[in-house]
Image (cartoon, rainbow, N blue to C red):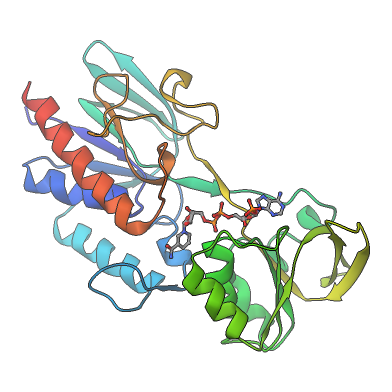
Length: 301
Ligand code: NAP
């Protein structure tokens, strides 16, 4: 009987692994608990993926999904709760059922962190969000703020300047973690106001967001800025709660070797959920290709 492989997650790394597995004669099943494409469709423009000088994240995601459907890769829209090794098989316990596979590839990505400040929960989904591309247009022409000094915050700030003319970036340090090219772009953009070193302390409003209270990290002085939407990009944690602790580091990232093998034979991992330095689309797809190649070798044993 043909060997069965599960891929948990349909971001770029999971998709690339699926393509390589199909080429190797395997028909993998992808498990996806949310929207296909991982963070790709939530990203404005991508300008560091070879072959595309610039491409909208959702467009690249659609092209990848199109490639998957041409290869007839099956996607189960289901949430994996547990992966249990039983002899030489793996049992996947999901929200809707139980499945058995010969190998499992974890490509479950990361989940955005919350600010944990007053007002966040009250307005989440109504002016507070982790996705400027998804929700920014609801606040067209209104002042908005992004929190964080990484690539995501700065890229999405540039997106917001296409729909409004006043965008604050709140960052807790003077130096930015984002790539220098992005830092130059936001500094050159007259619609972007940098508030550094500041942290958000409270989101205020009656029925909708009307302002954000900030605190200067050095002086501890507080001020309030008028904004109608707040997008938080303060990093992410791995989506690995269903994975055994023995293959994770202290932060929950999955530990693999250079072949994307974990310490449990038959379980592989790739992409943002793994312990690595550089989390980008280009490294995710590279991981996916390596993982699939290792899985094919493993299944031949
Ligand atoms: P990130 O790089 O981890 O940046 C998070 C930012 O939030 C940092 O500036 C951090 O400040 C700040 N922060 C963290 N906790 C905070 C808190 N409690 N309060 C206030 N600020 C806080 O996250 P990301 O921008 O989402 O990126 C995630 C990964 O995806 C990165 O590896 C990134 O390079 C990659 N990515 C790449 C691209 C691209 O290549 N085009 C685009 C998007 C994302 P500190 O700097 O002080 O720690």
